[in-house]
Structures are given as C-alpha cells and as structure tokens.
Amino acid sequence: MNIDRYRVRPGDRHALTRHRPGDTSALRDKDAAQERLLRSISHLEDRLELLNAQNERALLLIFQGMDASGKDGAIKHVMSGVNPLYTEVHMFKQPSSEEMDHDFLWRAHKATPGKGMIGLWNRSHYEDVLIVRVHKLVPKKVWKARYDEINRSKKFYRKTAQPT
Image (tube, rainbow, N blue to C red; front, side, top):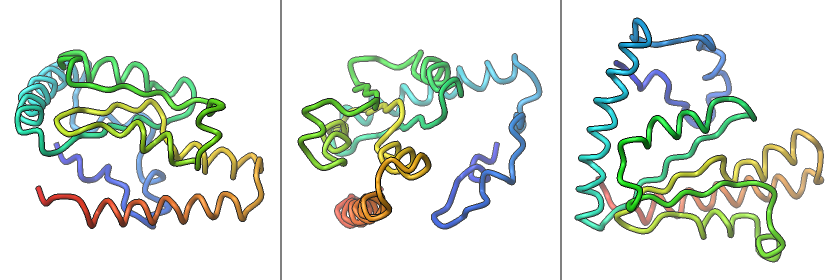
C-alpha cells in the first residue's frame, strides 16, 4: 500500500482535493481493513518497545479533524494493541486559564512526549490558528504571528532533531 500518496507537502494547497472522501486505498472490504489494522498494530507495538527501550526519540501522533470526523474511533483502533504505559494522551479544547497565561504554543510544548514515549493528540495547536482565522475571532496580525511562530518552531525542531 502506497501511503506516501496521502502525504500533504508544505505549500500543496490542493492535496486533499485529489482524494475522494470514500477512498479505501487498496483495501477491498472491511475484513481486509481489519487484517491490515491488526498487522499494523502488531508492527507498531514492536516498534514502540524499541522506541521505549532506546529512550532516544519520541513519536507524536496528531489526529486532526472536524467534530464527528472519526478521530476518536481512529485513535481507539490504532492504539488498541499498544501498551498504554508508553503513551501520553492530550486533548486540545478551549484553553484553560493557566494556558491563557502563556503564549499559544505553551500547551503544545508542554504536551510533547518525552523520549521513549508516544504522544497522542486529539486535535492540536493548529486549532489556535485555524479556528480563530476562519471565524475571524482575532485580527490578522494575531493569527499571522501565530503562523510565523509555528514555522519558527518547526525550523528549530528540524535543526535539533537527531537523524533517523
């Protein structure tokens, strides 16, 4: 299965329009999907044990989508065979008063998994730029500064990340 065709590259504004919402990739039916899921979970569990034992890197899985888009179900299925001791789960809802006392990326940085762990985010800090922009909740200079901060953060992590 070529999953690279689903990868969204920076600047590709039309990536999602190239796929039908009902696309099932190479999976013929529900049984084939279930079989693939079980193999993938087994593979993920093996890799997670290595990740934890080496204690050098972390894995962050972000499930981003609209309400009722299936995030919870996807999380349940993907993580069903994974040892919960290796996971840190965070939901990003409306910021708390403590979170509001910091810059908007503070809660994302705080929720980033430690080495040897899987971080699982139900939504992400992108809500803090997407929603406020679409619904015009803050002026352009605010959401534009947030975009710039995200891009600076990405560059920093790319520079400091260890090669795989």
